[in-house]
Image (cartoon, rainbow, N blue to C red; front, side, top):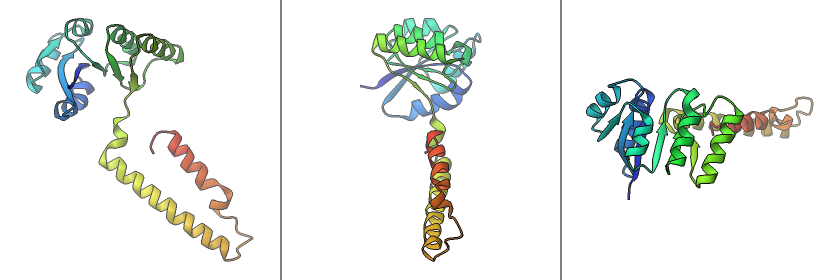
Length: 181
């Protein structure tokens, strides 16, 4: 059974999410909505999406969806997320998820009450270009790490290495914490 999906947003949603969902064998892109009259209809015809709506609530109410992708302006994310989970759908929301921490808390509460998943999209980290950069940074870190250890083992007691000082490790931890790893 495929994951029946609807998208809110005809900008990034249509340009990035729709093509991926249309190609992925686990998803069935059933609907797209826009707040701009006629825009969703145009996009749905171009991409072959069965249903289009000028009102995102109508899309959620009228199409049986397992997942709603929210790719709209952040000021609407909380309302859309809560409406979607209360209607029985899981949510994949674009960044930022909301305008502040209290809105995110409300979104999480609604998801927990409905036993639904609300996740934030970080699709760029999986692009081949980013993966290549990550591999390059990791390889350079390993090379530097080995070089630092070699210098330390040569009796360069007066020269504190970056490895021994923990600087490289702190940088890598920071990179990992920021979601690039």
